[in-house]
Amino acid sequence: MITVENLSKRYGSTTAVSDVSFTVQPGSITGFLGPNGAGKSTTLRMLTGLTPPTSGTATISGKRYADLPNPGRVVGVMLDAAAQHPGRTGRETLALNASVLGVPKSRADEMLEAVGLSGAAKRRVGQYSLGMRQRLGIASALLGDPAALILDEPANGMDPEGIRWMRGLLQDFAARGGTVILSSHLLGEVQATVDRLVVIGGGRIVANGSLDELLAGSGTLVRGLDPIALNQALTAAGLSLEPLQDGALRVDATAEQVGRAAAAAGQILLELRESDSAGLEELFFQLTTPTAVAA
Ligand SMILES: Nc1ncnc2c1ncn2[C@@H]1O[C@H](COP(=O)(O)OP(=O)(O)OP(=O)(O)O)[C@@H](O)[C@H]1O
Image (cartoon, rainbow, N blue to C red; front, side, top):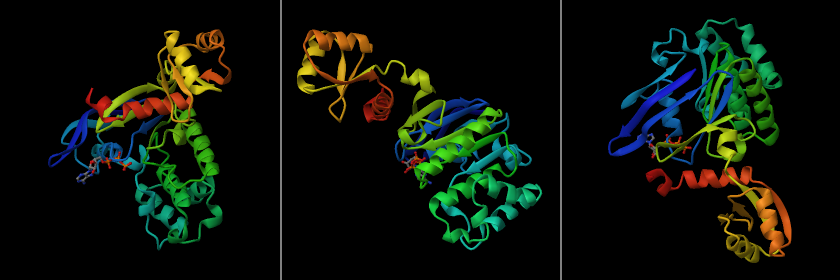
């Protein structure tokens, strides 16, 4: 389990992270979401002992990272895949990490295989694409067979196939009881992978819950042939709504209520469904606006 309690970090007059608390349970994948500059990397760096907190504590399996005797055997970390030594081959990178961790060198080849890099094992990392470096970073994080994974923007630079592959790998890891936290500034990138979300904006946690909880209450998405007339009809029927950027409306009501109100006003609908990604997108947007952060 990963536990973050009242964690804060100030740089001079800048508060990067302010009183952040959350837990990540075994058997789950938590998405740590927020726009650029929200405080994700700083939080993950404090969690992994790279940045000392100004106040608060962060523990993995009950211990601060710095107090873990062989941290790589407890938690696999990938914070900056692009930072790997460009002159080493993939195999050399993992073999070196394996010896630091005290695991057999054969584990390096196993992990290269597991992340689909066997064919590139003898190529220098400098020639790897960013997506390949992310795969290598994940292989490195998995070397010590840890119970937890902490990954900063692991989908960055990965193509859709790579993201699908990573999703399968992380879901298998969690299904075996592993604990995973991964950060992203793009909801769509992680929505199908995670089962919980911790959303950070302006250094503060603005939402924390299961994906289902956060999706519930996001209402109904409706799109009409005449969006303005549909908006007026639903508003006149007493439904509260907000227009989305693409002309659809997100309505705080069930699909049946929306359908009935539209039918009563003779409006032609092109789309009517429970609001999922669009609703979450909107939620994410709202939660990370400065007003929401200040609230
Ligand atoms: N070493 C530092 N010195 C001063 N300010 C910093 C330092 N590291 C981070 N910050 C500031 O702290 C805030 C949070 O940054 P952080 O990198 O944690 O955000 P992030 O959510 O990871 O964003 P990104 O997705 O862009 O990496 C930003 O305002 C950033 O400028």
